[in-house]
Length: 317
Ligand SMILES: [Zn+2]
Picture 1 (cartoon, rainbow, N blue to C red):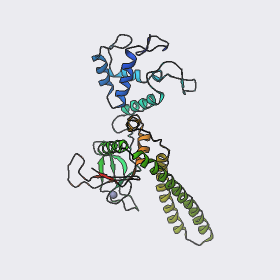
Picture 2: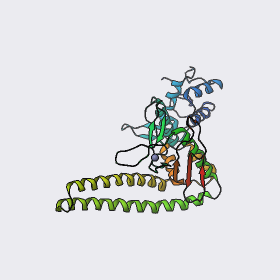
Picture 3: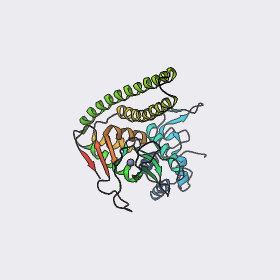
C-alpha cells in the first residue's frame, strides 16, 4: 500500500486524521463487540468514508487495516516483538491484541479451534463430572458430559456453547454490577487463595504417594498390577487437581475493577482467558442439567444453575 493509511494524515503516522481516526476507533469497538468486517465496511461507507487511497471499503480492506499494529502505536522490532513508537494511536495495545484474537478466530473455518469459556468450571448436573468442549453434528461448539472408560461419567448432558456462555456472561455482568458485590468478591477471592493452597498441598501429597508406590513395588510389598493400578489413580487425581489449580490460579490473579461500569467494560474488552478467570472468581459451581424437553432450542428453566462464590444467592435459568 502506498500513501498514507486510513486514520492518519501522513505516511509517517505522526498525526491523526480528525474525522477518520475517531471512525477507526469506533470501527475497532464494533469489531470487538461482534460486528463483522463486512458490516463495518458498510457502516464506514454509509458515513461517507473511503479508504485513504479513495477506494471503497470492503471486508478484506477492513481486515488489512485492523492487522496494522500502528493502530495501537506499535511496530514490530527485528525480533518480531511489538514495541511502542510513541506516535499517536487510535486504540490501546491491549485492545489491539484482543482485536487480533478476534480476527484470527474469524479466519478459522467452522470446525476449527473454539475457546470454551467455561471448561473446568461447568459440571454435569447429573453425575457432577466436569463437562468438556466438543462439537455437535453440525460442528457447532457444545459442552458435554462424556462417558469414559473406568469412570462413571453419565454422558447425559450436552448443551450448545453459545447458549450457556451467553447466559453465564449476562448473569456474571449483572452480578458484578450489583452494589456491594465487589466487597463480597474480594472476600471470595481470599477464599479462592486458601483453596488454591489446599489444592497445592493435595498435589504435593500425590507426588509423595507416587514415590511410595514405586518404593513398595521395588520392595515387593505390592504386585506389579497393584503398582500400575495405583499409578493410574494417582495420574487421574493429578489431572483433576492440576485443572482445578489452573482455574483457581486464574481466579486468584484476576484484578477486580472498582465500579460497576468498570466491570462491564472489563468484561467486554477481555480475552476469553480473562473472562474465564473472572467467571472462576465469581462462580463456585456451575451445573448444567439434563434437558427434559426434546428439541427445545432455548434454555429450559432450571437447565443451568449458577452458585456464586461467597454469596448465598443461586441463579437458575
Ligand atoms: Zn454426567
